[in-house]
Image (cartoon, rainbow, N blue to C red; front, side, top):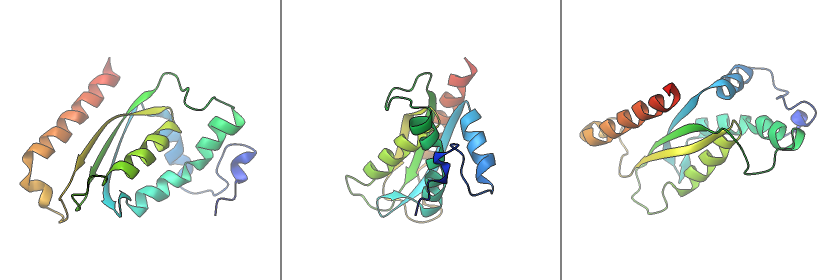
Length: 147
């Protein structure tokens, strides 16, 4: 459970690699996040990282009292995801989680690239158009920060 030790300072009480990760996210000019989709959301490893950013949310909205949804000078974020199911809502939950995760470090969900029907480790290689689309989105993300 969340212990909210971060309520006093906005910093996570658990001292580990997260301090480096959070500083990197806050300093980044843009962010790209990729995850497989399991049970209609991001992978557990990705979700753990997202949950560790709760201290950033606490600092931004509780301690600094920034109005919800009124971030300025947003950086761009790119989300890439692939899942086995062909369900129409396969990416809805993940996109919402990523949107609010990005928000904790002043980043907007600029673009999402999502691919259904991919389950095996190398199945993406059967779809060079997906790889090219992802590559091009990465190029565009970098071009945004070079302007």
